[in-house]
Image (cartoon, rainbow, N blue to C red; front, side):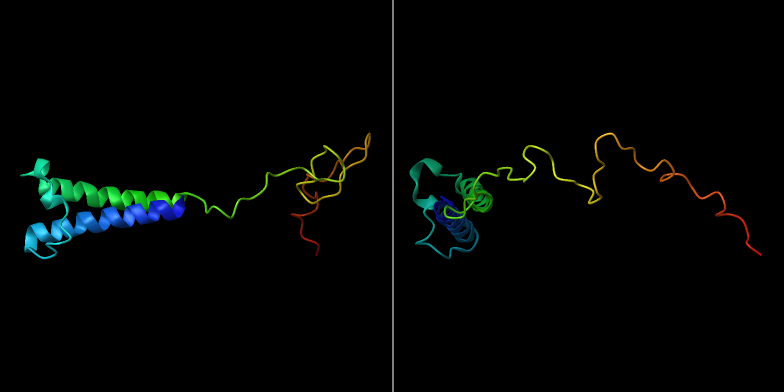
Amino acid sequence: MRKLLELLGTGLLLIGASSLVHYFTDWFGKWAVLDRLPFLDGYELYASGVVAVLGFAVLCAGDLVPDGGTRTPARTSRHPAGDAEPNAGGAEPHAHGSQPDAHAGQPDAHAGEDSD
């Protein structure tokens, strides 16, 4: 799908850009496909700009589509503790019924005193 979008976007961008160049400089006469369409008489400049911008947008959209062969499998939880979440902080978990250190979050009472 990605290759198809890249091919389509490149083609649209080349057609639109070559028609714009042909409109202003009379170069790329064979590439100016939009100038040959009878229902666009008088609107070739606008149609060329729209096709070039559309081609660029399709190229950008092609970058958002994942490659066909690089699918990743669905994530499953294979934690040895079963459904329990792994410890996110890296600290040792507390056993059931035990309390964390009561003085862990309090500042040291003697931190501001001079020890001379």
